[in-house]
Image 1 (cartoon, helix red, strand yellow):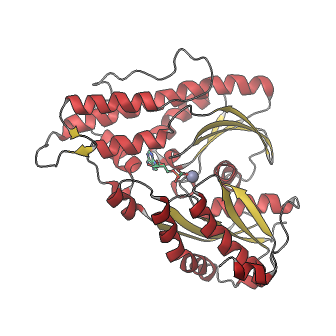
Image 2: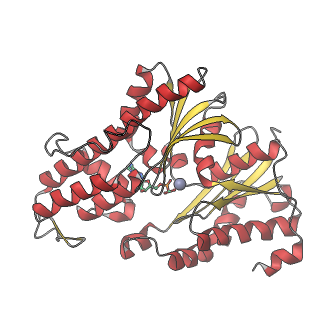
Length: 354
Ligand code: KG4
Ligand code: ZN
């Protein structure tokens, strides 16, 4: 149990990641190859392009993870790989790599759900974190509130009816003309520190819906209108820095957007905590994970709500909040321990997958 060694592979979106983790939670290696440059140039994920980018680096990323862990494939106990949700062309690159290794070295395979991995990595970070716990998973594609009752048993308390919060951060950052190479979210968080969060009035989404669902499309539209009415952006194309030198105004928009985007999270978390405690009074923690959970402002505001309710916030370090191989390896370990895995594929079939 404690000694198993699992290789985790993640290719569901725009990062190619691999890691080796031990059953006791020790991270032996962690490698991430980002397509952020590609994304910044083309303005979004084009599946075919993302697939090619994964295919180009997957062998190197996995080899690096093994080398950094000082291991060969033979010493592994299993291979874990993201099987969804995500872009199927991209997922396939990771899955066929995992099957090739597993076939060649007779290793079991654990197929991992990407969002489950975002939630469960909290149990690696905080080894005494027990079920049941509440989870808020916030990324570019997902906005979920879940009640994790036991391994593999999750009740969905809320989801987004349109966009996820990370998508709203990314679009706002693009419209504000920020440097997308480091990611829209981090760029916006940085700029927002200089702004007045109360300067522009955006309304909090879904106030009249007394549930735990989310909506960010309306806020996106409000931000877009605020930007266009001030002539900061034309048709998705930000005006060049030369035409536009009002950094303070951009910072005010960024800060005002962030305040309302996070207020929406706060309100939904407050309600989810009330709901969840009725179902599972023994809940002690809210796990916040996914790329947006690496945001300091988000962490600080949610920590406040959680503490007011007598609970504890568990938020993985930023490198484990954004997409990574560690969370896949760790979730693989959790399932592998309970005997939930597939037998090694036949070696020749693995070759065919190529
Ligand atoms: O979990 P993740 O790495 O990939 C998905 O599964 O989507 O999340 C990526 C999202 C992006 O929208 C990115 O802009 C956002 O997380 N993000 C942030 C921050 N860092 C990453 N959003 C706000 N503030 C941040 N510091
Ligand atoms: Zn993710």
